Image (cartoon, rainbow, N blue to C red; front, top):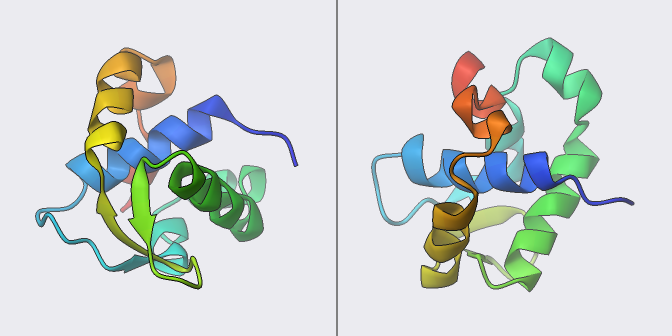
Length: 99
């Protein structure tokens, strides 16, 4: 599976701006369901799940042990987001556009 920098940034951005609590407890399915049907075809749920794992591997988010629930964004996640916040994908984040 290839990494999608836009998908990584969009997931992290949504976790920070699309939610109102520090503790997310958001499942990958809940995250995925915020995408439009067109984006769901472009980014299938297994791809979103894989990118959630990549964000966890990088230390940007904390997930439950099975990886299906995002618990919170870490300090490193906020630092990464600060570095990519001008990314074109974040100007119209597909997770925020539909949900």
